[in-house]
Image 1 (spheres, rainbow, N blue to C red):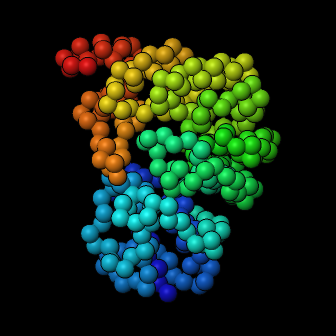
Image 2: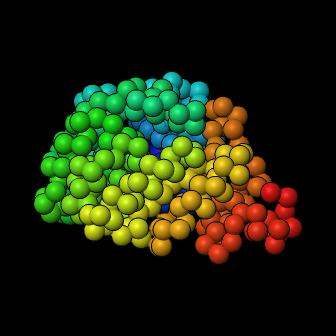
Length: 305
């Protein structure tokens, strides 16, 4: 069989380098059966085409064949909880289709016990549960491991897996942001003993998370981790005053890294407005938040905050 793979984000975002885990597993499965696998080309004919789309704002390719097997939360007309067949999900990913990827990627846990309004994970994956051991995910040709767990600290299994990575020789990144509300002294010690690729990531999506984030930063400092190693995701809703208060509370930590994400959920009709984009793209990304408040920025730009 001749198999075509389509990564909607890779096609649309030309700079995209992060691999699509589902497509890598599909590729490994078909290559294991002796099939020919390549990136889909609309000019060629294939026996089967697989298309994955992660974000609902990523355009749909109009040339995809009608019988393409589609998956991912970006396709709003298919069930959000659709998963790979077990025999495919169990495959070790085929990293050769993303030659610039020099790290292993995967999950140790799936799901999340929280039900945040802006998050699809509980509907897509259900409650938190064990999924894989880190030894099943790592690559022989790389010492880097990128984990995409949505709430790894919310179950004992996830914490045990992180603890067992201490001294393993692997550098890790938890790229979804941990919940600081779950960090105590013991967990802070575990996090401080791990070897990180770059940052230790947390989320601060609402004001109630400010105090836990501050407590976590202080606990990490007690264990030798400086604030510049901490990376904070900030959800930016229409309530910009809420977001600005979170920024003011956190920016006092010298060197801390803040990353703003305007709320977007086209399934629910949520589209960021002009000021949310201004806050994220210019006020935060441009670094203006380091020297002025959001109100001062708006006054200088002659915006109405």
